[in-house]
Image (cartoon, rainbow, N blue to C red; front, top):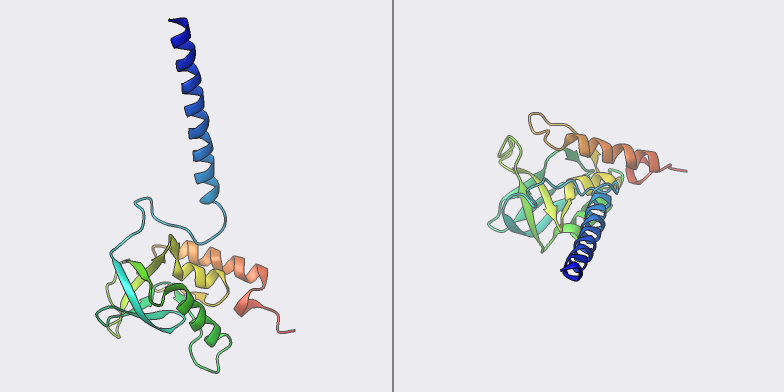
Length: 169
């Protein structure tokens, strides 16, 4: 019986060690400053396929709906600084891919576009565009569910001098 009890304690300690390592890994993954601010329930919304990117903060999904990213504003006009780069980065992130759309308060804007946070591979695209310095964080109440994250991403991009905040020399 003592052997069985000793083996049981060893198994318990090994299981405890694995649990601690996994918990630490999960904690560190959630604190890396990246734009992975996923809700506790996992990827929100329904999966949809992106058929076309319009610019740095707007895309078209299967069925033809246009989706405007909540909480950000990317340069769009050809003469605006980094408009092409923002569009191209958005294209790399989402075009032709399955994404998940998360609603906030309003369903659509005054132009009939869906208002959503866009997720791909566990990353919020809205926040990623801001983190890279390719979009500004912009609060459009009442849709402010992730505004603190977006503001934090802008502060980080600005501090690092990325994209829109890069020194012009």
